[in-house]
Image 1 (cartoon, rainbow, N blue to C red):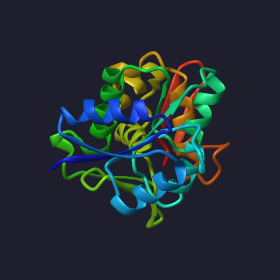
Image 2 (tube, helix red, strand yellow; image 1 turned 180 degrees about the horizontal axis):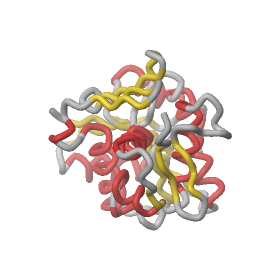
Image 3 (cartoon, rainbow, N blue to C red; image 1 turned 60 degrees about the horizontal axis):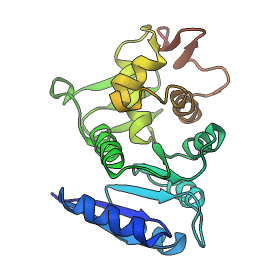
Length: 230
């Protein structure tokens, strides 16, 4: 089936270039020049992935991201001219799966899109029918769904992949680089600190008290592990 992407950006040249480039690899790219129309298009078409510019007329990319995360785990990539790490991390905190700083190469954007789509829909065949149960948390690998006390949680593809990786081997400590490589892909190895933001977002969704996590625990100076005594 054709993969549908909604691209929201107020620069006509970016809309044209991205649409043409992705069309060569059989992606269907729907474009919108402002935030209001972009959100309407996303809600109407339910695409496989969304690419949002940070600064938009009408609703900003951050506002759209925050709105979508209330009801959807659709993959989101933020495009931003803001080069400071604090600004990029802010996009992740509002629920984006990834960010790309302008100017960017189309090849890099394509690599990011394919990586996120793999995390959203591609799983190891030997786990195809697995249900992971850890305390109050149930993780269905097949349907890409997570429940806590029978209440379904809305996780992004990146959050799901990190949780799946940690929960498969409770007590095993993963460094940030290991999590990036195994949960996100080799192309993210230069974004080591971004894993902390994804972990923080994940804890807010699965922990009773995110500041005292019992599921996703920090091993200071090393990385993260899934709690053994669950």
